[in-house]
Length: 146
Image (cartoon, rainbow, N blue to C red; front, side, top):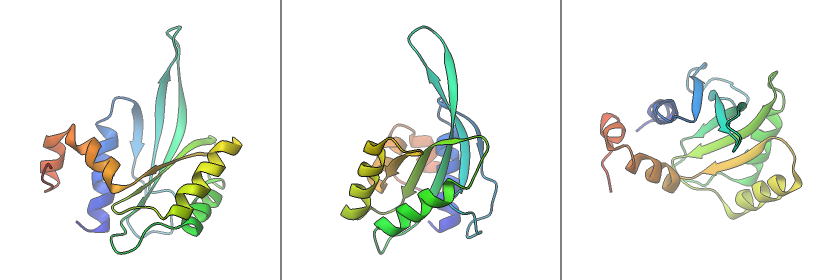
């Protein structure tokens, strides 16, 4: 799978999830997107029956040979802060590989500080788990179930 296929996979995966609305893939792969490959709204439900949504941005990193490192995560967070309105509450960095230990630690410290946006790191193992629940989607992208 190439970088374009990886972004298409993320787009299809998120579009098929009931918690996401308005999933958009606005820029072509390799564009100077400043940390924004996909955007969407996440629908949140509270116990009283109310709902609200938060803006979510996804940065795709199709990196197979090296881990996504701390400077890359920090640069993506800084770039995402330039987008808006609406305010971006959550950033998902999804990779076809994995994250370095310093990237994970940096993201955890950032999230613990309460600063926006909240960062979700999605390594290949998380994507595999999400795709396991949707074998048809995996097959459509030429991926086999494990």
